[in-house]
Image (cartoon, rainbow, N blue to C red):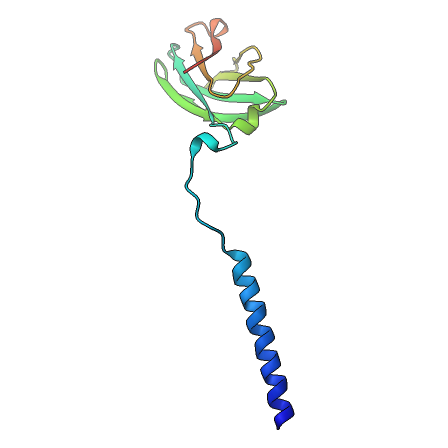
Length: 136
């Protein structure tokens, strides 16, 4: 009976120590968040002004992969964001496709740096559209 109690006592101590180690490894001190010290750049803002009367689907092309940003109504405007990981170190292009049409406009390759934004103007004549990178 004495031997059984000793084994039970040792087992209880081992379980308590293991639980303490697991709980201690999960805790971390609370730190104040400072966005200026955040190493991840903010998403790239994209302002689209559609001067065409047709509704447009806007997408970003990076590395040969097209990612839809959204739609802009005819003679309207919209704001989108592109995740920094999409454009990191590569050129990107913006496309505008009229809904229900076979036409397409693709901008020239754009190199965007941290803190910059893209202005995309969709012209009444689609091939005259343009996209520029600028500081906000």
